[in-house]
Image (cartoon, rainbow, N blue to C red; front, side):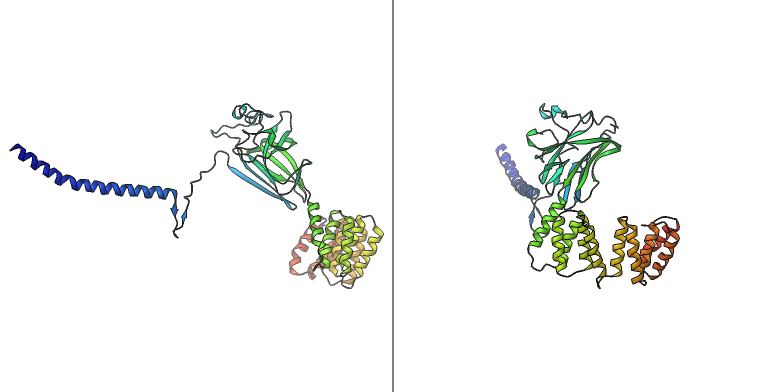
Length: 406
């Protein structure tokens, strides 16, 4: 009897057990497949077009020394600096003024030696990765040549003043911790000065002209600065020489442009004279003869220059504006007598042109004859096109206050 009951119970269990097993198997298989899909999605994402692409990573903001970059054009060249900007205020909110130099940034080659296996290292000139500086063309730093390229920038601050600025060929290091003197491309001495308080480290490039600029690092109460120069004129002259070698389709203006660059910058004067003669041979103009006169003056040949300039003024194509620009050029050079002579001739030849009384106003303003200058400027205002009236009104306001507007 008991055996009969036991067999009945086993049969009931089997009837219940197999459906459960089937459900569990299907569920487990579904979960396994889903898990595999999730892994696949983690490695690859699919855009709306169905093309596979790598999943983008989440980028966190950099703290407490944010990244920055600076780029400056100098002539035909560029300087680019990539750096990070630490703050005088610590991440904990502590003001570290007077504890930056010599403490947070040790003097000379003593920046955190324990982090560099005991080797003496300079400061990273910023924070985080290498500060880098890149020159688009060969340059000179404080008069020392350095090839075009990108460099790791390091600085050793001297307690007595001044700093050693180091340009390393290694640009992908973390700070200066792996600094190796063997990687140095150039070292220069830079000046340090006391400066207004700069709470967050900042690079700037100032005193920029066509050939050079002054790179400055400001932080806390100190400025570290060095000059970078490029051979802009050499690059331009090489460009002109290459351009003018092939004479196909060249016009007089092409030669005149090259000659004027020589005249304006007082360089390669003989080349300039050769080029301007080629321009004049293609047709005289007030501009081309004026450039030749300018070149002759630069060479000290003033009598020859006066003859050429007189030829320019006598050309049938010469305009009132040509006279005015030449008179203004003389005035800026301080030759009032010659400028007055040109302005008076302009007034005689083109009395109805607004630049004629405006030129007379200029010379009288320069001589301090403000009442006469105002009368001429009012005449110019009545004759000038609308686009020039604002400037003339500004000049009159200066003259009424007894101020030379030149």
